[in-house]
Length: 264
Length: 229
Image 1 (cartoon, helix red, strand yellow):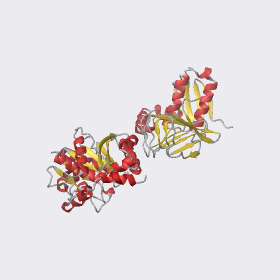
Image 2: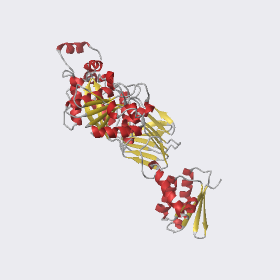
Image 3: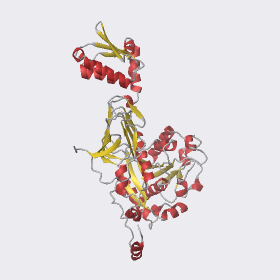
Image 4: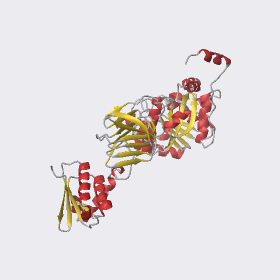
């Protein structure tokens, strides 16, 4: 993975923003200087899940329109050393920024930070084009479900056309119990279709709801399995070789009893 | 019947005229036929060929030049409008510039994998997986060394061979030809079309061998394993 990573998916709602927040925070926890960039102009969310929304004065569009300097728009997260956010605008739309402007902006950020993590909006139009403009590598987020995988495939093709071939997959919200029953795509099935390297698998985890609502990314929660998985992904980005988490189905006595009475 | 390709010998030149109303594929076929019929005359004749008539794209022009050069050893092939440009040095530079501006996909022999591109090639060879949203189309055969993912479209006037898993849409004989087939190592297409007939294979076809061919036999689509007589 390069220093400038775009987190994309095609499909909406699969966890790009959550992934951006967690990877960004994870990298900062491991001592790196990170800026997370929200390119979802008009529907900004990254600031919300980080708990930084009430600190926004200037945003990405202000920087690009030169209403303010880049430094003025960057929000320093006081909880974690080295973690910064460049928020999107909420009252504008995606035509307010062009890919060329994004490229220049990202080049500036690259000089100042160890890592630039770009949160891409859903879709393949202008928002996507803006987000990938400055990126050198990508993490494609997908859930193990057919429409998401279809969109991920499309995105991988588009990334390649845009010159980004360092692309890795993150399978999010996996439910081992459903996979076991055959109701959800297994990791192998997803990899077979998409054919790119896997950077990690994050299990479905209720703690994510709490993290988003409280503005505290799951990586900071020791009890969160998803947080642990995201930390593993962060370490892999830094080049460490971490085996995939064991996502076994919990088989206590009660659930085994339940299984006896369940019909397929 | 109107002449599609006219070839005349004038002085030390061979003047070739492409009928402006004819389609490029028919022009090419007629030219090949005519050259073939008089093979002894054309082969290594060192003639200078000047082509006029129907305006051809750069890719098409290159293909015609290839036919003369590779099959008949005739390398002196010019297009009437090119000659005019060549006599003026300033315009010669313009020609090479405009060639550079041309998108890579117009280059014969170089396969640029882009969406919705029409290739003026007789056949296409792709050594990558075709992803969702990508459409590969040509009037001849198409070979894919990789998978064809769901949401991808392979449209061929001729046959299609997939050295991988075919999960997307494949249409062989898209121009009406019936002597075509679709072959794949793992035949799991969302939809198969043969010479205009649409087939929706049942989900999770059982007992599929590795290496299958789909063909039209008496109007019906039939699957059979490759390598079985």
